Image 1: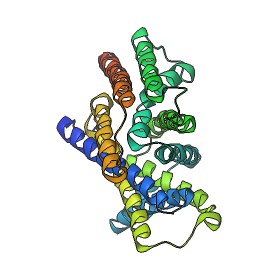
Image 2: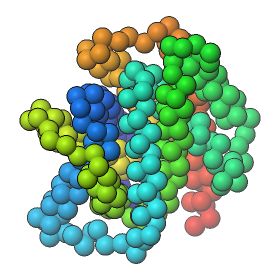
Image 3: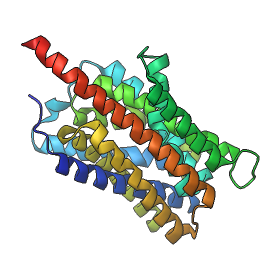
Length: 301
């Protein structure tokens, strides 16, 4: 039985998730710049999720909801997700928040490329035009040959978009048999011990402010992920995913308030192209889903 579609609730949940995850990006950047090592920051990003979800289910006597027959698949998703975190949170350490966030919008573009290469799906001319449009936006923002935009930062930002696209395919596969709460829990539970291996080399004493930032980052990450998955229970992907672009507003605001940085003209020229590409791809996915749905329904009658 599928949950009742509640599009307004779905949009609200997605917007709230975007606020939390954009805030998480700012917290990660600020925390690492305060002196906390990046690998340790990633470890504490995962730990609260394990205790929050595990404790909540234990209190309700529902730990059985975490039972799974696909632990190896969860482990592969955790390792991919952990790698994705290095790029996703590494980008704002090398770039201003707005630019790092904008490069993250390339995920739908990479998803189209992966669907054609890996999944052997047929990709029509409209989506290929959207891919070209998106990468034109990247070129405008990065301005190859100009020193104001670090090439390493651009590479890490684009890798973040690629990794999220790969992770989306894995999560979609897990979603066939696992509930969202289980997917989020096992991602944190399986990646935290691996990240802990680096603590003897990177961990250090922290100030109360730094401990507070580490805890805040973990909470924002946990609830942000849960809200993302909850939004998809009440609305279609193509409808809610466009809300993700509002993160550019928050990234710009945090960049201005905390680092006194406003994006240059090139970012404002390139970002609409990348956003338009993602919106076109999402709309085509929506039309495709509507076309397939009646055929599927008829086949079952």
